[in-house]
Length: 246
Image (cartoon, rainbow, N blue to C red):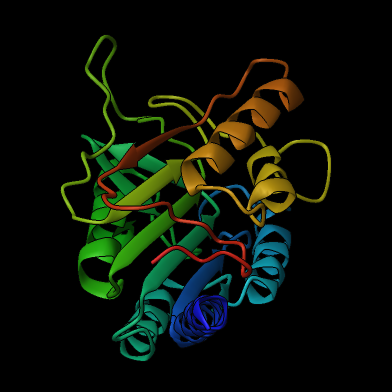
């Protein structure tokens, strides 16, 4: 009788866990920008966005993909994503395209952005604003495949990425502060390729990103390093559909 009760309780826990996983809402906004008007065109970002979007779909995300968007198009897509992501458990942003920081503010660069300092500040989209205004959800994850250099900084001036003060969020950058993210030799950037190779593994995202860092470092012969900012708390964050953290 006791064995029967234990077996029943175990089956009940498994069923509850499976149901909880099925109820978890995970959404992703995937952005790839390469057809720039006022900056050099980029070959990989649209490929990166397509590949990451397909990967995240397999991992159980509802994916919205935006390609070669103008500033107005990008903001409209973000507003629509915000509405569709309301109440989500995990919100993910992937960005591949031109990027930079100006006085510590990290920007997404729409394809029609003006690329001098005042133009970037007026027509770029700050990552901080994207996270604060367009990424609802209990947990937020940003994968930023772009540069973190400041081309307008004077020699010797301090360079820093914005400190993420949001709760339950993690930002993974493809490059170190003040450095560029390389395009690589394949159809995807080194950072995106490493994400594709490891992001579905049934381990915490922190361990995944350590593997990504190692692969990027090796693929670029030490020229590119990645880093993260995190304010996540609680248990593991696992993107594998078999073991989703709650």
